[in-house]
Image (cartoon, rainbow, N blue to C red):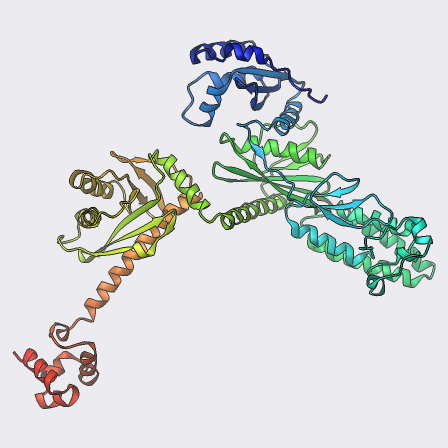
Length: 623
């Protein structure tokens, strides 16, 4: 397919139409859509400044572009995009595969505002063998100078494992000397420590020929390309040939290389070596913000290339489209000609004669699971890095998501959650936990003993505690929370609302968390009347809601247990004024029970706790 030339945008026309009304704009664009062909291709949306704001691919151009203008979109990024479109340009191609390639090239070329963005990979290193006599093995974060490049490596530890293996097998120079033939022949150089410890063969003084050095480099390139099995086979033949010629010392050196290669291959080989030249892709997402795609290339059952990259999502793109874009990007970048790719789910992609496999079991499923493990770990690592750089970023992100989910006017910086605890109405207590920017603020936690409610009435207990909490905050002119959460369903929410709105006349949003029969968070409720709010399970926001619910439950249960424990060890001695814990301990240690203390004489009590306290206890217990 030919390279795309710069599209010719008619800026004069854009100036003429920029003052048209929205209705006229949509009518004009719909007419353009009706004239589009039904062929594969790419479409470009242009704003009034002449800037490309979105590039998309289509199996059927007319049908795909029509979907943007055939209905009223929900408030969000798609609706915003449609409102910015001034012109539509398109390019027809022969196949869907060509459309995928062209879309990928255009996104990288123009970086449209509303397109998914592949994050810059300049921070990832390459292994670089420069074009120079007696070439060194280097690492580089810039791919531009002449030589062989391998990578980039998103998991840097894999790169260093390879480098350590190479340096253990082959004596390579690490110096910066100019080893041009004339410089060596002049005898200007002296061998360094690396030569004496057998880490370098001394090419600087002519002890290793360029031919021998380059032979090592050829073998190193085979290792970096994942061809360790072929290289091992080649070395074995060479070793046997040297042994036949009675060159045993040289044969022994090759044997050492073979053993190191086999040791490395035993660690890196993940499935049967019969699986050769296969690409494996998997995807994981970080909510609506980013997607991570892992790429493994398998040669002879071993991983020869592993790379995970990040896409910055702009319009809540689906995982199928993102994975298709990632496959095109990685196969193009690494010039992969693999005739089979393994993916986790079906996607609408045409790769010509390439076989697409979605394994359910066996060695290929093992490869896919390995790719999924890598992509999930990479996502976790990236999140940790972001949190280290900006500890508040996670909280801001989660609170923004919660604000969007509940359509709140402001981001809920402070969240308070309530829960009750009692056994058949006995020892009834309640607890309030406070979370600030998604993290527990334990100094603000509060415990409440229920005072006005008789029997097991959770709703009445909730009303009492909420009124005590917020009437006091109002009286003391302290900040109110941005969101109140009830550890329960609609009934608990209504109990809180009746106090907050009807009695105290406060404007604080109220939500509820309901659990299923297995005591797992199942519903997030909001509004009056309460409605279910969709939050995807196992997402960071859902996990935060579970954490809040578990924390308030733990805090309430712990307080309830403390109250019950105190009641269980309560005795008549606790009700006598002037008698403290130490006196009580002395008496119980001597007499064991209150009954035996009552049976003791005043003289006996005098000897244990003294005359004054003995008189008080004797009088109280014998009345």
